[in-house]
Length: 380
Image (tube, rainbow, N blue to C red; front, side, top):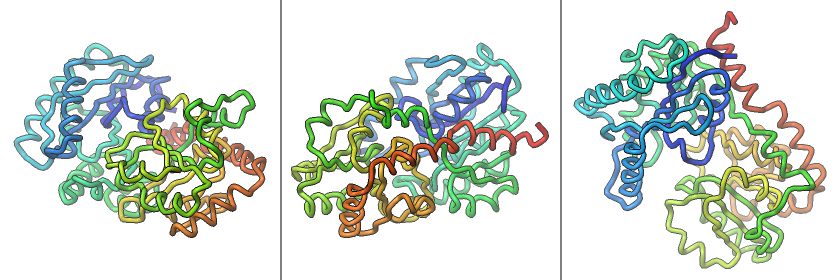
Protein backbone atom coordinates (compact mmCIF):
# COMPACT_ATOMS: atom_id res chain seq x y z
CA UNK A 1 0.00 0.00 0.00
CA UNK A 2 1.19 3.53 -0.73
CA UNK A 3 2.46 5.34 2.36
CA UNK A 4 4.59 8.27 3.41
CA UNK A 5 3.77 10.32 0.31
CA UNK A 6 2.23 13.71 -0.33
CA UNK A 7 -0.73 13.16 -2.68
CA UNK A 8 -1.80 16.14 -4.77
CA UNK A 9 -5.35 15.27 -5.86
CA UNK A 10 -7.15 17.19 -8.60
CA UNK A 11 -10.88 16.55 -8.32
CA UNK A 12 -14.10 18.53 -8.17
CA UNK A 13 -16.54 18.92 -5.33
CA UNK A 14 -15.05 17.74 -2.07
CA UNK A 15 -18.21 18.90 -0.29
CA UNK A 16 -20.43 16.90 -2.67
CA UNK A 17 -21.82 13.47 -1.72
CA UNK A 18 -19.00 10.88 -1.59
CA UNK A 19 -17.94 9.22 -4.82
CA UNK A 20 -14.89 7.16 -5.82
CA UNK A 21 -12.51 10.10 -5.42
CA UNK A 22 -13.60 10.64 -1.82
CA UNK A 23 -13.29 6.99 -0.86
CA UNK A 24 -9.87 6.60 -2.48
CA UNK A 25 -8.44 9.81 -1.05
CA UNK A 26 -9.80 9.14 2.43
CA UNK A 27 -8.04 5.78 2.41
CA UNK A 28 -4.81 7.31 1.12
CA UNK A 29 -4.98 9.93 3.87
CA UNK A 30 -4.65 7.18 6.46
CA UNK A 31 -0.99 6.69 5.48
CA UNK A 32 -0.17 9.79 3.46
CA UNK A 33 -0.76 13.54 3.37
CA UNK A 34 -3.45 14.49 0.85
CA UNK A 35 -4.02 17.94 -0.63
CA UNK A 36 -7.32 17.91 -2.52
CA UNK A 37 -7.54 20.65 -5.15
CA UNK A 38 -11.18 21.51 -5.79
CA UNK A 39 -10.57 21.86 -9.50
CA UNK A 40 -13.31 23.71 -11.37
CA UNK A 41 -11.82 24.79 -14.68
CA UNK A 42 -12.96 21.85 -16.82
CA UNK A 43 -16.14 23.49 -18.11
CA UNK A 44 -16.98 27.04 -19.14
CA UNK A 45 -19.98 28.18 -17.08
CA UNK A 46 -23.13 29.25 -18.85
CA UNK A 47 -25.40 32.15 -17.94
CA UNK A 48 -27.93 29.79 -16.33
CA UNK A 49 -29.07 30.38 -12.77
CA UNK A 50 -27.59 27.05 -11.64
CA UNK A 51 -24.18 27.88 -13.11
CA UNK A 52 -24.20 31.36 -11.64
CA UNK A 53 -25.01 29.83 -8.27
CA UNK A 54 -22.15 27.38 -8.75
CA UNK A 55 -19.74 30.24 -9.53
CA UNK A 56 -20.83 32.09 -6.41
CA UNK A 57 -20.35 28.96 -4.33
CA UNK A 58 -16.85 28.43 -5.69
CA UNK A 59 -15.89 32.02 -4.96
CA UNK A 60 -17.02 31.56 -1.35
CA UNK A 61 -14.86 28.44 -1.14
CA UNK A 62 -11.88 30.29 -2.61
CA UNK A 63 -12.06 32.99 0.05
CA UNK A 64 -12.62 30.41 2.78
CA UNK A 65 -9.04 29.23 2.31
CA UNK A 66 -7.52 25.84 3.05
CA UNK A 67 -9.72 23.46 5.01
CA UNK A 68 -8.68 20.42 7.05
CA UNK A 69 -11.81 18.23 7.20
CA UNK A 70 -10.04 15.10 8.45
CA UNK A 71 -6.64 13.94 9.61
CA UNK A 72 -3.93 14.29 6.93
CA UNK A 73 -6.39 15.64 4.35
CA UNK A 74 -6.50 19.29 3.26
CA UNK A 75 -8.83 20.94 0.74
CA UNK A 76 -7.96 23.99 -1.35
CA UNK A 77 -10.40 25.64 -3.74
CA UNK A 78 -8.10 27.68 -6.00
CA UNK A 79 -8.78 30.84 -7.89
CA UNK A 80 -8.73 29.85 -11.58
CA UNK A 81 -10.29 30.88 -14.89
CA UNK A 82 -12.92 28.33 -16.05
CA UNK A 83 -12.07 28.72 -19.74
CA UNK A 84 -10.94 25.29 -20.99
CA UNK A 85 -9.17 25.39 -24.31
CA UNK A 86 -8.09 29.02 -24.07
CA UNK A 87 -4.31 29.20 -24.22
CA UNK A 88 -4.10 32.42 -22.21
CA UNK A 89 -6.34 30.90 -19.49
CA UNK A 90 -4.08 27.86 -19.18
CA UNK A 91 -1.03 30.07 -18.82
CA UNK A 92 -2.74 32.16 -16.14
CA UNK A 93 -4.11 29.11 -14.37
CA UNK A 94 -0.72 27.43 -14.36
CA UNK A 95 0.77 30.49 -12.70
CA UNK A 96 -2.10 30.83 -10.21
CA UNK A 97 -2.24 27.14 -9.31
CA UNK A 98 1.52 26.79 -9.02
CA UNK A 99 1.65 29.68 -6.56
CA UNK A 100 -1.42 28.68 -4.51
CA UNK A 101 -0.57 24.99 -4.29
CA UNK A 102 3.12 25.44 -3.49
CA UNK A 103 2.21 27.79 -0.65
CA UNK A 104 0.10 25.05 0.96
CA UNK A 105 2.57 22.27 0.21
CA UNK A 106 5.32 24.13 2.06
CA UNK A 107 3.20 23.89 5.20
CA UNK A 108 1.88 20.32 4.94
CA UNK A 109 4.23 18.33 2.70
CA UNK A 110 5.33 15.11 4.35
CA UNK A 111 6.93 13.00 1.63
CA UNK A 112 7.65 12.56 -2.07
CA UNK A 113 4.97 14.16 -4.23
CA UNK A 114 2.49 12.20 -6.32
CA UNK A 115 -0.29 13.64 -8.49
CA UNK A 116 -3.61 11.78 -8.73
CA UNK A 117 -6.12 13.45 -11.03
CA UNK A 118 -9.80 12.67 -11.38
CA UNK A 119 -10.07 15.65 -13.75
CA UNK A 120 -9.09 15.00 -17.39
CA UNK A 121 -7.52 18.36 -18.14
CA UNK A 122 -4.60 19.04 -15.79
CA UNK A 123 -1.80 17.75 -18.00
CA UNK A 124 -0.52 21.32 -18.40
CA UNK A 125 0.22 21.41 -14.65
CA UNK A 126 2.25 18.22 -14.26
CA UNK A 127 5.65 19.69 -15.10
CA UNK A 128 5.13 22.55 -12.64
CA UNK A 129 5.39 20.14 -9.70
CA UNK A 130 7.82 17.43 -10.89
CA UNK A 131 5.99 14.57 -9.14
CA UNK A 132 7.56 11.13 -8.70
CA UNK A 133 4.34 9.47 -9.91
CA UNK A 134 1.24 10.59 -11.83
CA UNK A 135 -2.10 8.75 -11.84
CA UNK A 136 -5.00 9.63 -14.10
CA UNK A 137 -8.08 8.10 -12.46
CA UNK A 138 -10.70 8.11 -15.22
CA UNK A 139 -14.21 7.46 -13.89
CA UNK A 140 -16.37 8.95 -16.67
CA UNK A 141 -16.49 9.63 -20.38
CA UNK A 142 -16.02 13.36 -19.81
CA UNK A 143 -16.24 14.23 -23.49
CA UNK A 144 -19.93 13.30 -23.42
CA UNK A 145 -20.93 15.42 -20.42
CA UNK A 146 -23.44 18.15 -21.18
CA UNK A 147 -21.72 21.53 -21.50
CA UNK A 148 -18.22 20.15 -22.11
CA UNK A 149 -16.21 20.83 -25.28
CA UNK A 150 -15.80 17.22 -26.42
CA UNK A 151 -12.80 17.74 -28.69
CA UNK A 152 -11.00 19.87 -26.13
CA UNK A 153 -11.60 17.26 -23.44
CA UNK A 154 -10.13 14.55 -25.66
CA UNK A 155 -7.04 16.64 -26.40
CA UNK A 156 -6.51 17.45 -22.74
CA UNK A 157 -7.14 13.86 -21.71
CA UNK A 158 -4.54 12.57 -24.14
CA UNK A 159 -1.98 15.01 -22.76
CA UNK A 160 -2.65 13.92 -19.18
CA UNK A 161 -2.68 10.20 -20.00
CA UNK A 162 0.63 10.44 -21.85
CA UNK A 163 2.22 12.15 -18.84
CA UNK A 164 0.84 9.58 -16.39
CA UNK A 165 2.64 6.58 -14.92
CA UNK A 166 -0.71 4.83 -14.56
CA UNK A 167 -4.19 5.32 -15.99
CA UNK A 168 -7.01 3.78 -13.97
CA UNK A 169 -10.39 3.22 -15.61
CA UNK A 170 -13.57 2.03 -13.96
CA UNK A 171 -15.45 0.33 -16.80
CA UNK A 172 -14.59 -1.83 -19.78
CA UNK A 173 -15.66 0.86 -22.23
CA UNK A 174 -13.35 3.39 -20.58
CA UNK A 175 -10.58 0.81 -20.56
CA UNK A 176 -11.01 0.15 -24.27
CA UNK A 177 -10.99 3.86 -25.13
CA UNK A 178 -8.05 4.88 -22.92
CA UNK A 179 -5.69 1.92 -23.28
CA UNK A 180 -4.33 3.36 -26.52
CA UNK A 181 -3.27 6.54 -24.72
CA UNK A 182 -0.99 4.82 -22.24
CA UNK A 183 0.25 1.19 -22.20
CA UNK A 184 -0.03 1.15 -18.39
CA UNK A 185 -3.82 1.40 -18.27
CA UNK A 186 -5.81 -0.87 -15.95
CA UNK A 187 -9.50 -1.39 -15.26
CA UNK A 188 -10.46 -1.28 -11.60
CA UNK A 189 -14.25 -1.23 -11.10
CA UNK A 190 -15.57 0.86 -8.25
CA UNK A 191 -15.55 -0.47 -4.74
CA UNK A 192 -18.08 -0.16 -1.95
CA UNK A 193 -18.09 1.23 1.58
CA UNK A 194 -19.32 -2.15 2.72
CA UNK A 195 -19.38 -1.68 6.49
CA UNK A 196 -21.39 1.51 6.08
CA UNK A 197 -24.12 0.18 3.80
CA UNK A 198 -24.35 -3.24 5.42
CA UNK A 199 -25.77 -1.44 8.47
CA UNK A 200 -29.06 -1.43 6.55
CA UNK A 201 -29.28 -5.17 7.20
CA UNK A 202 -29.02 -4.85 10.97
CA UNK A 203 -32.00 -5.06 13.29
CA UNK A 204 -31.12 -1.83 15.07
CA UNK A 205 -31.23 0.41 12.00
CA UNK A 206 -33.83 3.20 12.24
CA UNK A 207 -35.92 4.12 9.19
CA UNK A 208 -36.13 7.93 8.86
CA UNK A 209 -39.42 9.57 9.76
CA UNK A 210 -39.93 11.21 6.36
CA UNK A 211 -39.67 7.79 4.73
CA UNK A 212 -41.98 6.15 7.25
CA UNK A 213 -44.68 8.59 6.20
CA UNK A 214 -44.60 7.06 2.70
CA UNK A 215 -46.40 3.74 2.40
CA UNK A 216 -44.82 0.51 1.21
CA UNK A 217 -43.82 -0.73 -1.23
CA UNK A 218 -41.10 1.87 -1.71
CA UNK A 219 -38.99 1.90 -4.86
CA UNK A 220 -35.90 3.90 -3.98
CA UNK A 221 -33.13 5.85 -5.67
CA UNK A 222 -30.34 8.03 -4.28
CA UNK A 223 -27.77 10.09 -6.12
CA UNK A 224 -27.45 13.18 -8.28
CA UNK A 225 -30.60 13.78 -10.32
CA UNK A 226 -29.19 14.94 -13.64
CA UNK A 227 -29.99 14.50 -17.32
CA UNK A 228 -28.71 10.93 -17.20
CA UNK A 229 -31.54 9.89 -14.83
CA UNK A 230 -34.63 8.82 -16.80
CA UNK A 231 -37.36 10.53 -14.79
CA UNK A 232 -39.83 9.98 -17.62
CA UNK A 233 -39.32 6.24 -17.27
CA UNK A 234 -39.97 6.40 -13.53
CA UNK A 235 -43.00 8.61 -14.09
CA UNK A 236 -44.47 6.04 -16.45
CA UNK A 237 -43.85 3.29 -13.91
CA UNK A 238 -45.50 5.42 -11.23
CA UNK A 239 -48.59 5.93 -13.39
CA UNK A 240 -48.83 2.23 -14.22
CA UNK A 241 -48.53 1.22 -10.55
CA UNK A 242 -50.18 3.84 -8.39
CA UNK A 243 -49.93 1.43 -5.43
CA UNK A 244 -46.13 1.73 -5.46
CA UNK A 245 -44.28 4.76 -4.13
CA UNK A 246 -41.16 5.94 -5.94
CA UNK A 247 -38.79 7.80 -3.63
CA UNK A 248 -35.79 9.78 -4.87
CA UNK A 249 -33.04 11.29 -2.72
CA UNK A 250 -30.53 13.76 -4.07
CA UNK A 251 -29.83 17.18 -5.46
CA UNK A 252 -31.44 17.99 -8.81
CA UNK A 253 -30.72 20.49 -11.56
CA UNK A 254 -33.81 19.34 -13.47
CA UNK A 255 -37.24 20.99 -13.24
CA UNK A 256 -39.08 18.51 -11.03
CA UNK A 257 -42.45 20.30 -11.08
CA UNK A 258 -44.09 17.96 -13.66
CA UNK A 259 -43.01 14.91 -11.69
CA UNK A 260 -44.07 16.26 -8.32
CA UNK A 261 -47.63 16.33 -9.69
CA UNK A 262 -47.60 12.54 -9.76
CA UNK A 263 -48.88 11.59 -6.29
CA UNK A 264 -46.71 8.50 -5.84
CA UNK A 265 -43.43 10.15 -6.85
CA UNK A 266 -41.58 11.65 -3.87
CA UNK A 267 -38.48 13.86 -4.02
CA UNK A 268 -36.94 14.17 -0.57
CA UNK A 269 -33.88 16.21 -1.55
CA UNK A 270 -30.35 15.74 -0.29
CA UNK A 271 -29.72 13.47 2.65
CA UNK A 272 -26.41 13.05 4.48
CA UNK A 273 -24.24 10.13 3.41
CA UNK A 274 -24.32 8.88 7.00
CA UNK A 275 -28.09 8.38 6.74
CA UNK A 276 -28.21 6.49 3.42
CA UNK A 277 -28.18 3.03 5.08
CA UNK A 278 -31.24 4.08 7.07
CA UNK A 279 -33.07 4.98 3.87
CA UNK A 280 -31.93 1.77 2.21
CA UNK A 281 -33.45 -0.13 5.12
CA UNK A 282 -36.77 1.50 4.27
CA UNK A 283 -36.58 0.81 0.53
CA UNK A 284 -38.08 -2.39 -0.84
CA UNK A 285 -36.20 -2.15 -4.14
CA UNK A 286 -33.29 0.00 -5.34
CA UNK A 287 -33.37 1.26 -8.92
CA UNK A 288 -30.80 2.58 -11.39
CA UNK A 289 -32.96 4.25 -14.08
CA UNK A 290 -30.22 5.73 -16.24
CA UNK A 291 -30.86 6.72 -19.83
CA UNK A 292 -28.86 4.78 -22.41
CA UNK A 293 -26.36 6.91 -24.31
CA UNK A 294 -22.63 7.25 -24.93
CA UNK A 295 -22.06 8.75 -21.49
CA UNK A 296 -23.85 6.06 -19.49
CA UNK A 297 -22.40 3.25 -21.60
CA UNK A 298 -19.12 3.99 -19.80
CA UNK A 299 -20.65 4.42 -16.35
CA UNK A 300 -20.07 1.99 -13.52
CA UNK A 301 -22.61 3.14 -10.90
CA UNK A 302 -21.24 3.10 -7.36
CA UNK A 303 -24.81 2.88 -6.09
CA UNK A 304 -25.11 -0.62 -7.59
CA UNK A 305 -22.74 -2.08 -5.00
CA UNK A 306 -24.13 0.18 -2.29
CA UNK A 307 -27.66 -1.13 -2.92
CA UNK A 308 -26.40 -4.72 -2.92
CA UNK A 309 -24.35 -4.21 0.25
CA UNK A 310 -27.51 -2.87 1.87
CA UNK A 311 -29.32 -6.12 1.02
CA UNK A 312 -31.60 -4.60 -1.60
CA UNK A 313 -33.08 -6.14 -4.69
CA UNK A 314 -31.95 -4.04 -7.65
CA UNK A 315 -33.62 -3.18 -10.97
CA UNK A 316 -31.64 -1.28 -13.59
CA UNK A 317 -31.69 -0.20 -17.19
CA UNK A 318 -29.29 -2.31 -19.30
CA UNK A 319 -26.04 -0.49 -18.57
CA UNK A 320 -23.08 -2.61 -19.70
CA UNK A 321 -21.35 -2.65 -16.31
CA UNK A 322 -24.56 -3.39 -14.42
CA UNK A 323 -25.48 -6.29 -16.67
CA UNK A 324 -22.38 -8.10 -15.37
CA UNK A 325 -24.27 -8.42 -12.06
CA UNK A 326 -27.35 -10.04 -13.58
CA UNK A 327 -28.42 -12.12 -11.77
CA UNK A 328 -29.08 -11.09 -9.04
CA UNK A 329 -29.67 -7.63 -10.54
CA UNK A 330 -32.78 -7.48 -12.72
CA UNK A 331 -32.48 -5.68 -16.05
CA UNK A 332 -35.30 -3.70 -17.70
CA UNK A 333 -35.24 -1.36 -20.68
CA UNK A 334 -38.85 -0.13 -20.85
CA UNK A 335 -41.47 0.99 -18.36
CA UNK A 336 -43.41 -2.27 -18.83
CA UNK A 337 -40.24 -4.27 -18.19
CA UNK A 338 -39.47 -2.13 -15.15
CA UNK A 339 -42.93 -2.85 -13.75
CA UNK A 340 -42.46 -6.57 -14.33
CA UNK A 341 -38.99 -6.66 -12.76
CA UNK A 342 -39.92 -4.52 -9.77
CA UNK A 343 -42.89 -6.80 -9.14
CA UNK A 344 -40.56 -9.81 -9.25
CA UNK A 345 -38.15 -8.10 -6.88
CA UNK A 346 -40.95 -7.30 -4.43
CA UNK A 347 -42.06 -10.93 -4.49
CA UNK A 348 -38.55 -12.30 -3.87
CA UNK A 349 -37.46 -13.73 -0.53
CA UNK A 350 -35.91 -10.78 1.37
CA UNK A 351 -33.45 -13.12 3.06
CA UNK A 352 -31.94 -14.00 -0.30
CA UNK A 353 -31.43 -10.32 -1.06
CA UNK A 354 -29.59 -9.84 2.23
CA UNK A 355 -27.14 -12.54 1.18
CA UNK A 356 -25.99 -10.17 -1.56
CA UNK A 357 -24.33 -8.07 1.12
CA UNK A 358 -21.91 -10.89 1.90
CA UNK A 359 -20.79 -10.98 -1.73
CA UNK A 360 -19.86 -7.31 -1.53
CA UNK A 361 -17.27 -7.95 1.19
CA UNK A 362 -14.79 -8.75 -1.57
CA UNK A 363 -15.39 -5.43 -3.31
CA UNK A 364 -14.39 -3.01 -0.60
CA UNK A 365 -12.50 0.14 -1.56
CA UNK A 366 -9.46 -1.16 0.30
CA UNK A 367 -9.05 -4.02 -2.18
CA UNK A 368 -9.41 -1.65 -5.13
CA UNK A 369 -6.73 0.68 -3.80
CA UNK A 370 -4.44 -2.28 -3.15
CA UNK A 371 -4.66 -3.26 -6.82
CA UNK A 372 -3.92 0.30 -7.92
CA UNK A 373 -0.99 0.57 -5.52
CA UNK A 374 0.52 -2.66 -6.84
CA UNK A 375 0.19 -1.48 -10.45
CA UNK A 376 1.78 1.87 -9.61
CA UNK A 377 4.64 0.23 -7.69
CA UNK A 378 4.88 -3.32 -9.10
CA UNK A 379 8.15 -4.09 -7.28
CA UNK A 380 6.62 -3.50 -3.83
